[in-house]
Length: 300
Image (cartoon, rainbow, N blue to C red; front, side, top):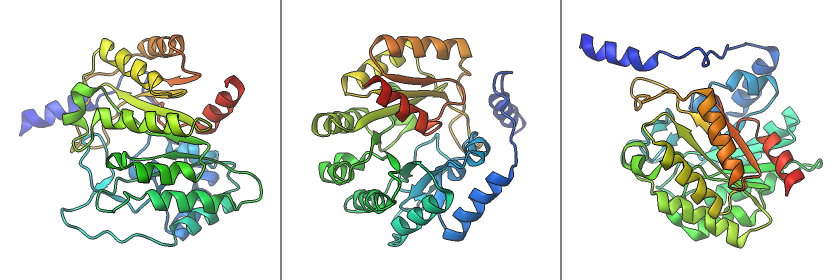
């Protein structure tokens, strides 16, 4: 037992470049109050994002729809897992609640993501579409990004989301194919690439984005191959960040990637044609998403 605890503590030690300070502000309190009143979930809180304070300070939040329990068992994620056979009710008022939160916070750029709901016939695609269409009723032209699960490759679900007209369609590849079984059980690397290719081929007016985590045991050549595959799939933007273990029940960190290495991957991604690359220890798929969209508009 003592040795196990020592090993766990070894994984949790962080290098000097990973020392983000948590700041509690009035803006953070306001965002939490509005979201709490409406009973909304955010991936910021559910996934224990290290950027929560910063994003809430700037009145930014990534809304987590379809509930707060996931039907997949990804080992890197801290979102609650559904019990086998558990019936998870779908909140029919969710699109309206997201609309009310965005309106109250006066958000100009919104990111909508979800837990994976393999228990639903459409994987939740219709709920994404309803939320997007509801937000389009705002009178100031809000920009919308979706970060969707793979919908088990169901083209009808993917089309339902894309037909609703998000400005950015994001689906994270997360890691290199060799680590999928260990990191993303239930997911398939080729299936995720197929989703991205489908959106690119059928909805060329929608910006395509993906992201991956480093520090799980991947090799440099594997990361570069993934970047090549994402670009070939039509992705214009990619985010690359450090995996930070949310809890002792999650997969251990294999390695802390240096800022210099993140810079290397950024340069390589730009060389192969990505219009926007965010690469750094605290980068997350939805972090500063409004800046990604702004830069994509400039460079496209």
